[in-house]
Amino acid sequence: MPNILLGDDDEELTQLLEEYLHNHGVQCDCVHDGEAVIKKLKKASTQTPVYDLLVLDIMMPKMDGLSVLRQLPNIIDIPVIMLTAKGEEIDRIIGLELGADDYITKPCNPRELLARINAVIKRTNAAVSEHTPLPEGRLHLDQNQRVCQIDGVELQVTGTEFDLLVALLKQKGEVVSKEWLSEHVLQRELQPFDRSLDVHVSRLRKKLQPFHDEPIKAVRGKGYQLVL
Image 1 (cartoon, helix red, strand yellow):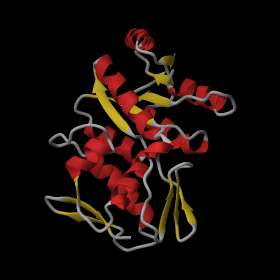
Image 2 (image 1 turned 90 degrees about the horizontal axis):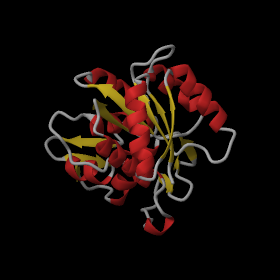
Image 3 (image 1 turned 60 degrees about the vertical axis):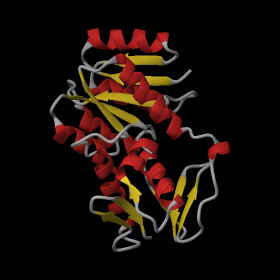
Image 4 (image 1 turned 120 degrees about the vertical axis):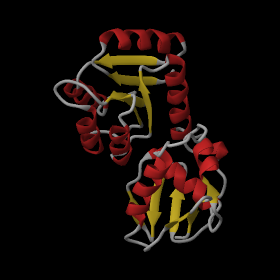
């Protein structure tokens, strides 16, 4: 049973979501401010089992969700789904740039949230049996340990960034469409005006640029090409 942490100051909503998720096989702990999220994650980082995923509201008292995201790398490695107000695109973009894996707008449909949770956990915990050999070169991806190395130097990437690299490396030198990447990496159809994939690629490109001037090439109207 997946074990997640839900941080949201709307106690009525969190109770509804907790009951729905529990009825569909997801264990859910709820807290209602950013400081409580940090405290829970610090405690979880020293225990077993740790949380499989964090669902994080952007607007919370004591410490907002973006501030929580900024602290996460120093606390725990955990995938994150953001809860954002409808129309607050800038918060979603900043959250993705800070390492969040996905987002869902509020008020959210519990069924959609469950689908997003299952999709993120599935790709984070990809089975070893599903791994296929990757081309050898400067870039080395250990799919068992989910470690990325370039020229022998380990690169810190998020779970979504790692999956993007796997997808692009499998088709190295070819242009991979945004539609395909969205469906196979983000586990959802590409929607008009959805910049999530672009933000993930942009963040990944910046991490790769010390090793290559243009590691991921954007081909207008077509998609992305790994050239590293």
